[in-house]
Length: 67
Image 1 (cartoon, rainbow, N blue to C red):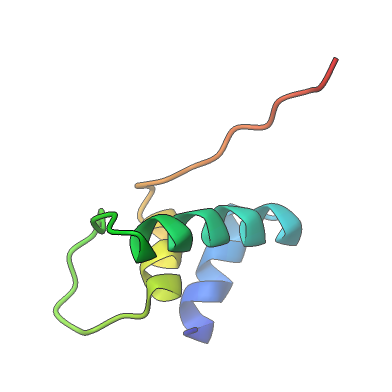
Image 2 (image 1 turned 120 degrees about the vertical axis):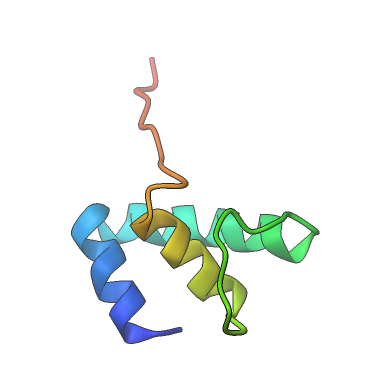
């Protein structure tokens, strides 16, 4: 995992637990055949793709309150 991508994604999603969950869900989607939402000339690991998608605003998250 690239540290520069991680730092940039942490500026967008401040809570580390939420960031971990968003990245892990997206990595799972990518590993099961999901297509990247970004274009890159370099070969990236699924974790780096997920972080870049967060940085570029391609994926986000929504919190909900349990009743």
